[in-house]
Length: 171
Image (tube, rainbow, N blue to C red):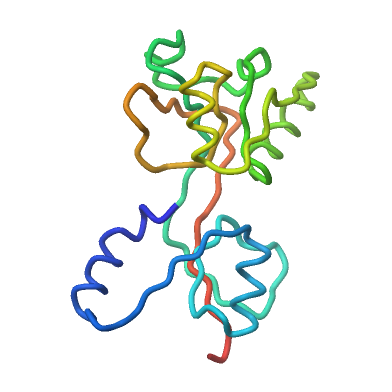
């Protein structure tokens, strides 16, 4: 999730070698609450709330869902996969993944009732389960994949998200 910030973090660390940087991993609501309490100065959030709140949001990246499959999977050679084809796959989704929720709604509109085979608690678990052949991952993860796994973008209808840096207004 930090890949949009790789260059920025590298420059910051080089410019301020004595500054301590703490990177925390948690769900968006918990990160927003910690930012509001002053426990964190900046957070990276996968979505921006529809309503105006007390935080500033600075978009840093945009992306869509992708399937993560083993390199020997029939979809591995595809340039993209229509969302409708996801209906018949053994899906592994992350807990609280906003793409899964949006995909589930879109598939229901198409008359498909889809349930994930596994709901994984972290991206590491998702990738491990895909590598073990349990199913295919539906994820927003845009980082590098381990050897033996490939990512295939999910196409129409488009599901997009904007990743933002958030700061507390007035601080």
